[in-house]
Image (tube, rainbow, N blue to C red):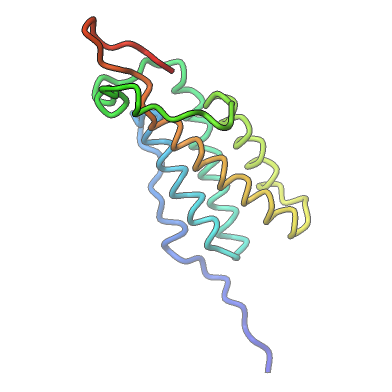
Length: 153
């Protein structure tokens, strides 16, 4: 007896809201984190393509936010009161560069001109890069001093 393959797309993979205007770099990074987590959970080609396209759009918008100043409401989240809150950077790549890496991987994955094993490897790499980027973008970059906020990273 042949097993009928289900091709219906599940809502948990496609119900990501469209990108609202005004998302800052942390909102976009967290959105990408949710997308890539969903991507790791699917083996459906239609779901995967939908997620790649949503990620491509989000990465494009994220790339434009790097020229904008850090929103005032994010300053407390990105400020540490002492130097011990800063962790050493183990992978040296600016967020802008990591976004470019993710964009290139996403474009390659959208066009689906690679074998299944390579696709799985690139999905894993995309997952690792997006999660690294989220951690880096949310990490403290300012420190409170007697003279006010000082950018440390």
